[in-house]
Each structure stands twice: as structure tokens, then as C-alpha cells.
Image 1 (cartoon, rainbow, N blue to C red):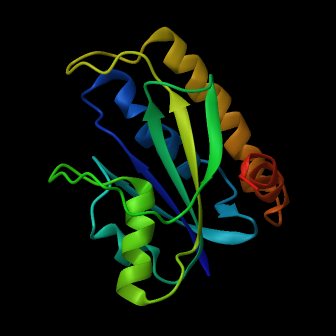
Image 2: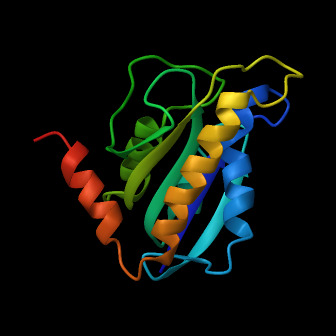
Length: 165
């Protein structure tokens, strides 16, 4: 079984490019595994309903996105299925994606976590901000540890700490 690494964001919008840029760095790492499982990479501008198909047959899913608010340099937390009450034609939330998976396949989705890299400048045509570059480096160092693990121990330890009881 594979691990899906799905990074989303717009390369033309400054720090919004953090997710796809981290994915590019991961693709260059010599060990192409997470938790001892091969990685399947996916990148897009935003989360769409079609992405439930990409999750089929995966052991786990790692979502990577830039975050305008939140912990520096990044946060890592589990995502649980939940139907959001607001709707938009401009993408969907990760929790709603997992809920859609449950609805479509009548089974729980793969265990999923979000790596949210703190960003600051998201305007069209901007370059990465200086602080976002530092946050990208820090997130890559941490993801490299996940890639070098032979199991999901590090991933699971963090989920136990952040998972609500």
C-alpha cells in the first residue's frame, strides 16, 4: 500500500506555494517512502471532490498546505471526517474531503494528517517571504525524519499528542 502525499497551493501566490514546494523537495529525497511504504505524490491548486479517488488503496494520506494563521514554522495534526456546513465551488476542506470519501465508499478514509506550513504573503505575483523560506526548510527537515522512519512511529506519536480525547 502507498502513502499519498497531496500538496496544494498556487505557485503564483507567494507563500501559497509552500505545499507544492515542499512536495518538490520530497521528490528529490533518495528514500521515497513514508512509514516504510512507497509514496504517491499529488499536487493541485486546491482540494476537490475528485481527490477522493486518489486516496483509494492508500495506507495513509499526508496533506500539505500553507497556512496564513497557526504555529510557526509548521503544525502537524490529524484530520478527521466532518461535513462542513458552508459550501463553495472553489474547493473543499480536508475534513469534508474525508467525509466525502466515507460517503462514496461506505468505509473510513485512510488515516490522514495535515502539515500546515506557516506563510505570510499570499498576493498574486509575490515571491516567498523570507520567514516562509525558513519555515519551508524547517518543515522539510521534519518530513525527512518521517521519510527515514521504517514505520509510522514518529507520525503516530505526534497524533497521540494532538488528537483530542
